[in-house]
Length: 178
Image (tube, rainbow, N blue to C red; front, side, top):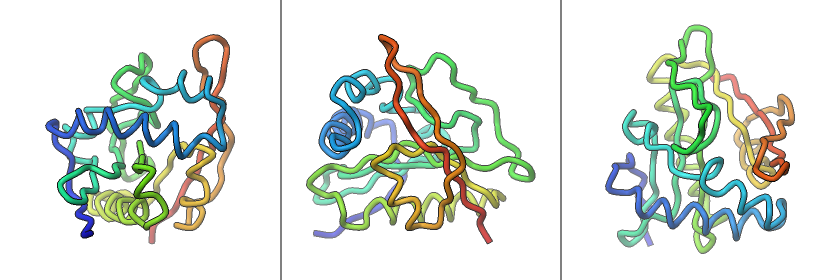
């Protein structure tokens, strides 16, 4: 079945709200506890409509269904959904700042087919077209192999605070574009 990558619209939010928890609960189960995943769904793992409004969020469709998503950002926020209380929506300066790679999720039935790589390539090309020469992201433990394979380097581990004193370990990563 053909996979189409396109910019997301606000009409996709409902499909994304179904896709993201499904992806987290299935694909991240080997790296995080149920408690970590459930605490992160919503605030850490969720839809950030500012990415859609900015025209920097992509979806992959197969047979008219959204099967993956991911984006990039010109804003300071490194990760999180609309529910994040501490979002920093200030604009980044491509001359000195790194664009952010954000919110990649794949439907479990469509995992390991190169869809994430295709979306990442679209993000990198879009960021370059806006003058960015560096990228950074906060990868889940599950996503690290994808980003390393695509030329990203480890920067530092981060423990994202979750409710009830829990944390979600992620890895800040970066890439310098030619």
